[in-house]
Image 1: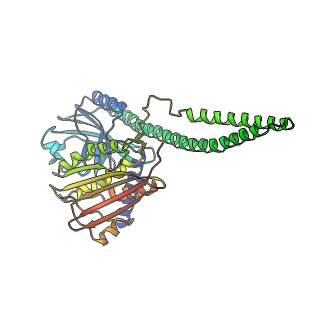
Image 2: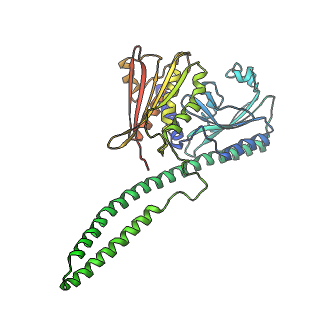
Length: 404
């Protein structure tokens, strides 16, 4: 039994890593996904259709038709069962299913009665989410309708993966451009110096016997100037992807990052009457930098803070860019929730932390903090925990970033 639980834990952590690698911005919806949810509802004749991605503790609705929803605690969802199998899940009567009959979305508006969900798989067995349709009355989908939903689910996964591939391509190009600018700058300095020395020597060589040397100096100046012009031409090129993607689609600045975090997680905090605040402690907040994996790291840490903070508590987020030999992004989330002992901190920072229930007995899946720590390390960053009575618990992250 223990071996089975261990294997299940490894499978789930691998699934979460695959979702994190897709680096989905849960606050931004691809129009193509909205078209697919609308199509799914139209084909099945259901009033509601959703595309959901499941993180460690939260189900994020990245596209919806017929229901205004962005996030749901994972423990309350139907899709948590869909991702456990490659086979679609059909529930003919939600009111008769012991897992869901007492859920708010069944007993109250929108009074869901019928559910059909298809897992979204990335092709290597990792099911990161689900496409589902729901109805407020009994429903019986035909085989043809179910086949069409399979096609739509595949297209939804393709859209998510293609957006990620485009993002990775652009980040690679941006990194190459930074290297290109540095190399070009390094070329300009020495060549400019050689041209300057040649000009000084040419001015000093007035004797006719040195005409041959002057010709050599002219060649040096001419060749050097050609290299400088080439360097300027390289610097003037803009290697953005030739698509309709906005220049900053895959980048962010510290103010935008703050706004996204508040937009995504303040509603979750308010559901527990927690006051969530964020401040930017940076003199130049408009500089853009790659946002790869940042939302996944910070989002998991904020969700954890909400989970372990008592109702009517407070959570503070601090963001800053620190300039030393390199530029470092600092993120700190501080809550006045449960104080952790040094032993508990050591356990959390270990490779096998045990999950505990939240202040409202929220179910713990045991992966959120572990995933955040893994992603921080993959970004060559560092993570620290401080917890003291009357001071609360702070998790601080430092991540080196490349600035254009």
